[in-house]
Image (cartoon, rainbow, N blue to C red; front, side, top):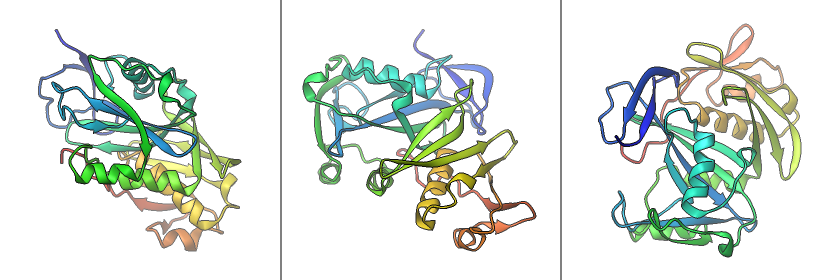
Length: 273
């Protein structure tokens, strides 16, 4: 028997079934996948070249990636894949989630790790990786054009996030679900965003601690949190009179106690779709 994965529904709730690699999933079922991009102190990115006998064989790819096997979430999986594929030890708290793609049968979590890296620190797993190098994020565009790098549809969003100077430090509950985000802007801690996702199809954000930030930064933070949770249909932000008018410009409608917005599912298309 090959690798076994847990199965989730469209709300990212684990159901009492497992799945073997290579077997087609039923409609409406999902498995968890992870991509990790390691960014060094200069803003350059660690990339790896896939071995020939894998899908996209011989092409350059993100720093590490893989599927979450049964009993594991994507945080644990990301740490494991980085160590197995390129020999780096990363702590869970170093992982910064930037978005989740909801594909036909996959929930694909995208993480970045901001860390000082030297090529001599990297030890590749030759069964998985042909080569590794560190390049500028902008060089990837040329590699995509010449067909040597996998064309991920979220690359522009990744570049945008890296350049905007806003960092998230995620705080998880015991199920490893994000419950709070510590926001850092230009290396300065500015407050926390509290998240309540104990609802069937909606999520509530409390941004009271960051209300003093520039509106553009607040919009960027909300946009990123939306991208991290494509499983929710309705977004609710606890009403704050200072932001009502501005957030109405990005689709939020004023209700009695909240600002509400219908979620734009899959704003960033998956690689395979």
